[in-house]
Image (cartoon, rainbow, N blue to C red):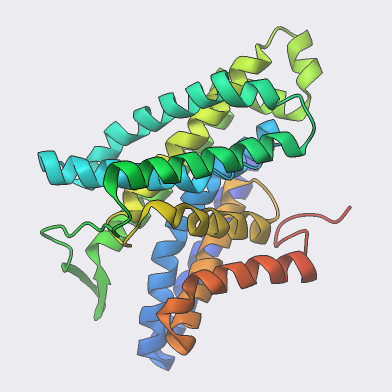
Length: 315
């Protein structure tokens, strides 16, 4: 209970700090405040995108380069659910999540499990090959044309204290936080979540006490894919996407993970918000076409200057 109270107090302090900073910015520069607020909203989405990648890497020690392509698949599924059946993308995530979970489970069972015990670079090469296959499949099925969802309420705004906030971005951010909290509960409060953590900490010891480690790998990969689809569905209402967008998405997710320096959900949220703000401010200064380049630059700079990240430890 003491640990829970400490975490709650820490979260409240962070929230109060963010609120105070936003109030100061409001009086200093309203234009910059809009930009920063936009970065905060998209930061939650970046954290959600990074979560699945961090989970797979933390449990299986595999860098799933196909994670971005799975996000693109989630975006396409939401796009077609809306286009063909009129299902709102914020509702179709309920369909996208189980579809991507089953896909991820199958990929790990039939493909990744065969190479997981080989040399360290083999799974990465397989994931890269999977990314290429998925991109080619997307082009074959849906062409290379950029897609984007225009909802009846895409132009709607929430007005808070004189600030006008994009409704779609706000809802996407709220759903991202809900997804992050749900995974935190699953990983820390359920037997399956604790079993996955046990396997990530010591594979042999987990097997010794009766945990089906291979099945935990399959579940972890499935959950990672499900959250990739979740993030992709939310991205589809904010950004345009195309079959090759997966590489840009996975770079953003990697930048968040490297910036956080740990797999903790709180660290990913803060790192996501920081990256979102840096991107938004940078895009305002040098142009929106450089957003992906800014993410990659952050990724490289953190690796060079502070490889342990914001919340990691040296050594």
